[in-house]
Length: 152
Image (cartoon, rainbow, N blue to C red):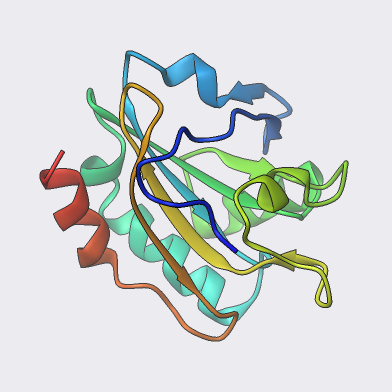
């Protein structure tokens, strides 16, 4: 079960597609965070969602907001995926320990070995202010993220 709105977002430390360490705590007091979990790189719905974010990136990565996308893929896979699709925001690897961060947010599918489609908007204080969780085949609506960010 996904963590609830109003709770403190679990901190994490993950490597991005360039091997840099990214911590949720690094954004505390500085930026709101759109934390997006997705099943796998190079799959149809995931590629569509991440490219839609790419196309609207200034709304999700600016002075007030940081977009972080998380999957259980390796950093090497994520690097190639980002290069192929022109994704310039951090793709974080929840590869090892496998799915640890996805589990902390309650969006890891144990049977499939990957995250379901969970998105959490975390305010500058580190509190989850909005979330949506969809099953593997169901894309999320980008406009919902925009509305939730505008409400902060």
